[in-house]
Image 1 (cartoon, helix red, strand yellow):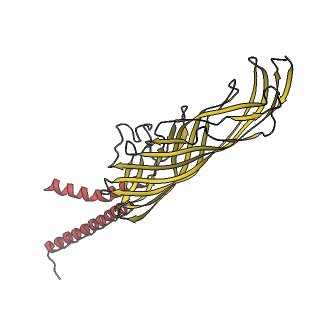
Image 2 (cartoon, rainbow, N blue to C red; image 1 turned 180 degrees about the vertical axis):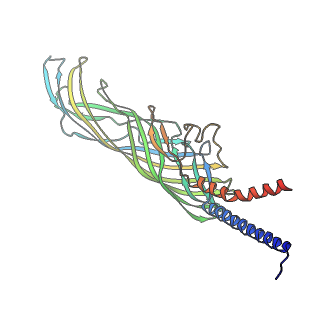
Image 3 (tube, one colour; image 1 turned 90 degrees about the vertical axis):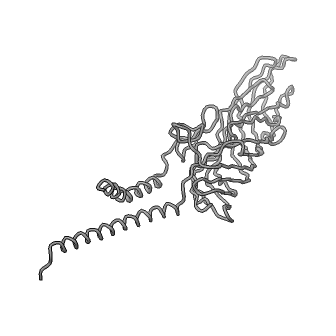
Length: 360
């Protein structure tokens, strides 16, 4: 059987064309699948809460006990006699803030940006939700005077005053975030993390003469930030709002030794052990919102007060002024890997188009 050479060539060309079409179709399908999976996972929207639209209202209380034990010597200025004394029962004294709980009303802000995955008007996940709840402000406090009993005839009661400054109160996301839709663009959220606070300039003063400075205290406790969310606008440019109300307690344990002597107006020497075991109780309500996509300033990838190499996800610490500082961590590379795979799958298509254009 004879077959013309032109027919063989035509069949071969047709076969190669069909093979190329099949390969391209497979690549298009793979790229489409990747893009589809990316859409299902949601668009990662950078979010930075800041500005006048934010609100944080809270009452901060401190309750617990102050314990003092010890002894000393007093020179009686009237009789010139030396009198040994001890701190007597009750050695434990209740604590309360002078004037009642501290009332706070601030504009919180993000510490570096977070990312929210948004699909179909609903958030599906979030990472890097780190919030400076005091927004850079601080609050001073003082406790009601603590009357410590002694065996001294001249000074049967020694008043002790304690004061300090709440320099920061923050939330740091350390776990996962869950979102449960309840309506169109609305739902509830829960973000696992911890609350942390810095108490600075703590001072205990006895008789207004003996001052016992206390080292800065950094408090933290596990906390799930929870509330409701509202999302409007399209997935690529949404307005995200978070609202909630909750309360939590931060444990405070301080132990200090007092060893001091004063000559005037009293000749007094004292050695005492002071201890404070308390809970800083916080009751709060908050509103956070961002309209549109946050674009980090040139040269940095975090918020306005973040280091230049800040990425979402971090380790919390405090600087010398008691302000929160988030040590950067490298973000999860999943989204970047997915993007690279998608580009790699689409590359042969682009190359093919370029070749056809160059040949025409």
